[in-house]
Length: 323
Picture (cartoon, rainbow, N blue to C red):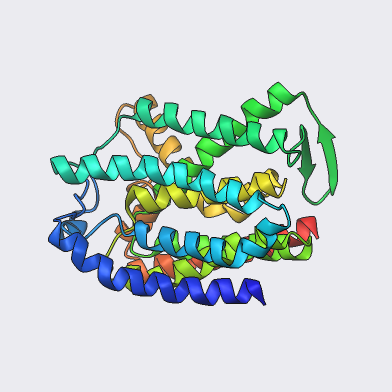
């Protein structure tokens, strides 16, 4: 019951927060600057309020504290660790968004600054999980349903790479109205079901609250979007997706549940590499790959529906791989 209540209450709080937050962001002139190299028709979105992720972050945090309190009293803090980890990434995104808004440019923190902060956050989180006995140096292999033990240092380096790559993959997905929101909802449902069936009720509260908060945010972020989540929201989501995967000790399901995130990233890598090798040729019309489909005539609503549907299907496959 607490899982359902966390979802419902976080939905209501998120929708209510955004109702007041959007006018406040407009008053502060916290509008999104559109990338010059993006699709030309996205220029009409310039000035749409950004940093809307603050709304669903607040709703999630309140839901977790309110409905996760009984489990904290029993000494279970896994959900707080994962939430704090995601909040650190959200803070990094907020700083990035702040510079973009303040100086009216699309670039905030440099890539090196972001990478250093993200690696530090990942290392601290993994060390905390290991210190508290929530993480060992072994990888659970989906489908085979077995574990492979590896050296802790090797595991740590692998995990840091996965986290930073995963977080930025979620960030890249946030390029079409509602897309990162819609794709992440079934991922959060997946984590809720996994935690619930394992009896980790405290940990189940976090993705449940996030599910409700994202549904509330989608009321304003669906096409045509009235607000964008900004790096504040997308980095928070990325941190939560990766943080939950390690808290539940199933990081190797990320390529399944996060297929869309990783295809988005892979499309950019392939495009840039092929462009350099061939001195100007391209594989895709534009990357990340959602822009390729946009330029091929797909509407933003169709991209949202297809990518979200694919993610929901892959979450089902991931569940079968570990059930």
